[in-house]
Structures are given as C-alpha cells and as structure tokens.
Image (cartoon, rainbow, N blue to C red; front, side, top):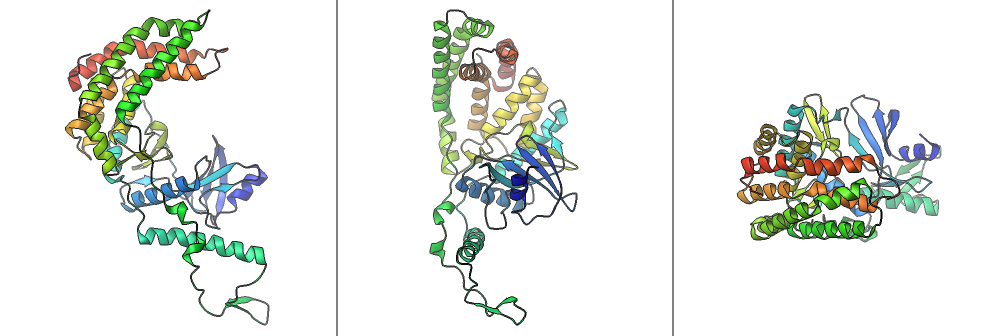
Length: 389
C-alpha cells in the first residue's frame, strides 16, 4: 500500500492487521480475522454513497441478508480522497469466494438469495432516526473543522491544572442549518422503460451496420455481423413489438410507483459464497425499476454458459420463486427479455466503441456464440415460456 493510500486507511476508526491489494481495491483484515473490509476506488457521488449507506443498512437489519454496506470515516465521510485525487469508499466485506458458475447448486443458491433481496429492496424516504444518524456524522465533521480552523477550544471546555481539556457541560447540538441537507435528499434513479431500452438497442444495431458498410476492408467480426444482421434485427423488432403489446409496461409502471429497486448488476462476481451463507455485493448500479430484470440478467448469463439447459433454467426460476413468486406480467417480461438478441447487440455495440486497429479474438467468439446458440435458446423459450420465434 502506497503512503497516501495508507493515509486514507488511517482516516477510519478501524484497527487493521493486514492488507492485500486486488483490482482497484484493498482487502483489509481487522484484529479479528472475521472482521474484513474492502477499501475500493469509487466514482460515486456523496449522494450516491449516502443512498448506499441507507439502503444497505436497512437490508442488514432484516437479518436475512449480508451486504457490503459502506463505513463512515473518522470525520464523518463516506468517500475519502487520497493525495493523488483517487477517491475511495470503505465497505464491510466477507471472507468468501465468488459464486462458481460451474457449480449448479451455487447458481440455485444465488437465485434464491435474489428472491430474498427483492422481497426487501424497496426505497423509502429516510426516517427521523436514520437522518439523525447521518446528521450526527456530519456534526462530528463540522465540529472538527471548526476547531481545526480556529485553533481554539470550545467555550464549553475547561482546562485543568495539568493542561487537560474537559467538558464543563454537555455540548449543545449543532444547529441543523449547518449541515448540507441536500446531501440527504437522496433518491435512487429510475431505470429506462423496457420498451425504450429495446428501441435504443435496435437503433444501435442499425448504426453499427451503417458503420461497417462504410468500411472498405472488413475484418472477420464485421463480415460475420453483416451476414447475420438481417435475421437478428428482424427478431429484435418482432420482440420489441411484442413488448409494446404486452403488459410489461404496466409491470414497469407498477414497480416504479411502488419504488421497487433492483441490484442492477446481479452476476457471479457480486455474489460471495461464505461458510453456510451468501453475501451480495457491489450495489453501485442499484436503481428503481423492474426487479425481475436482475433475474433475467442472471438467468441469461447462466443459460449462455450451459447452452440453454432447460432443467437448470427451470431450477433457477423455481429457486427464486421459493422466496418471491413471479407475477404473470413478470413471467411474460422475463420471457420476452430472454428472447431479445441482447448478446448480439451488446457485442456489436462494444466493438463499435473499441479500437478497430486491433480486433480482440474474444469479440469474434462472443458474436459467434450469440449466433450459434439461437436454436438452443429458441427451444428453451418455446418449452418454458411458450414463445415461438
């Protein structure tokens, strides 16, 4: 750990026995080996950090979920900057490992845990008690800053014969107007509607085709994309039309009206397998929207890995429903989302933003996978969801 990163760590009231660097972060182990924290680089704003603190602490209080709630620094900050300008957030962490996609039982466990998460993940305005906790943290920061700037001792303090400072009487609470209350006026953003999202993807697919057509010499990826574009685009438009005529927009409106929230990035990297339990991490993409979008994303990743193995797909959905029953509209939404050729769109969109002078082999592999698995996916959707493409 570099000197200025060490200085960041020392701004927390946490006794650290050892540290270990990982991707853009440091694992910090406390005096008790079970006390683990993660000091991670972040681009989150103060408002986003406050939102994470409120939401994740609420989830912890249910007693049913382990999450990576952020920790306040000694002077009441959720985000601390190093001398080089890098911003860090300290979060609770756990001694475990990432969910193994090769172990079906762990996929079922992760799906069941997602059902529990969705049961409790709902935005509510901060209570008086929660605001008091946050304001007290800022009170510490404001008082420390005032003493630091003036170099003086509070008028309530007295100096004893040996020079020690003691309080004559209890400090009066810092006036509320001293606090940046706008930092606590936090509310998670709402996701785009599923229809708007599909229409955007359709437009991007056409833009990629136009871009490739203008290139005189086409590489392997570009030739493959043009070869399969018409079939994939036609399918994308058909699914978009079906989405528009379905009840999925009502599901979206209902979830937004009820302030239902989704994790936003529920994948095996963000699921830790612990001895006898599971932890869910990295809620930075958390937002209001259709909760079952998390299940779609997790299920699609698993199905691509297992070549749309029907037994596993049914198992994942049933594991989720052991904790939270899907509504008919959510079931329809899940099927339509799976039917959309998202991997084809996503791979092409990523390629278009990349450096074209160098063609990553993975890009070609992903595009080939998106095309080659269409028949297996079609059979899965027909059998499980009754969708005929």
